[in-house]
Structures are given as C-alpha cells and as structure tokens.
Length: 109
Image 1 (cartoon, rainbow, N blue to C red):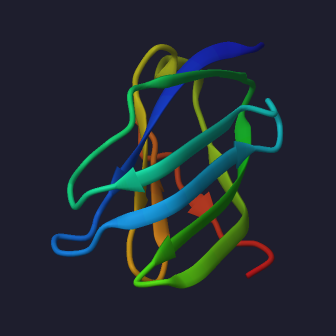
Image 2: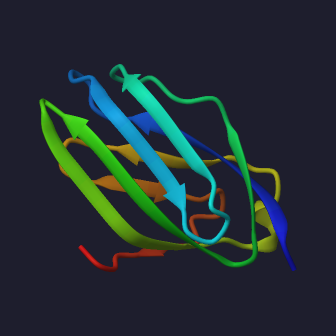
C-alpha cells in the first residue's frame, strides 16, 4: 500500500550555513534543491508517495566542503501517512526522523 509522506530538510547546525543542498528519494524520484539553508532553517514540506522504505541520496556543502550521503534506508509505517518526516543535516552527517521513529539503516557510506 502506498501512502503520502511529507518531509522537510533542516539545517541542524547552530552556527553554519549549509549550501548546495540536493536531496533525492530513490524510490519516488523526488528531488529537493536548495541554494542555502541558514542555521535552524527548514525547507517547506515536500510530498512523496512511498510504501514501507525510502532510500535517500543527500549532497550538501558546509564550510566549502562537499558532503555526500547515499543509500540511507528508512522505514515508514502506514500510520506515518500525512505526518512530516525530517531530514536534518549536520556538519559531518545527517539524520532522518520519521513520525513513528521506525528506524534507519546506513548503507553505502
């Protein structure tokens, strides 16, 4: 069963602007591109349809350093439908938080 899962991308740094943000969902093909996210700033919600797991491909720059994180697999539950998931970018990594905290595994980095 496929369901709607909105998500936002947040700069989790308290001091540093993140630039050249690209977030793609492998399963839905949804792409978010942001030139600049100031500390604590978030994108407007973006909607994807998905059915259980989502694989994220994330690229961004912080302090001029390019960071790529590919293959982050996150589980979603049916009751996550229409609740906002968060992708939080940090200087050296990122977190994906689903409404039900259904866990994520790290792959390919």
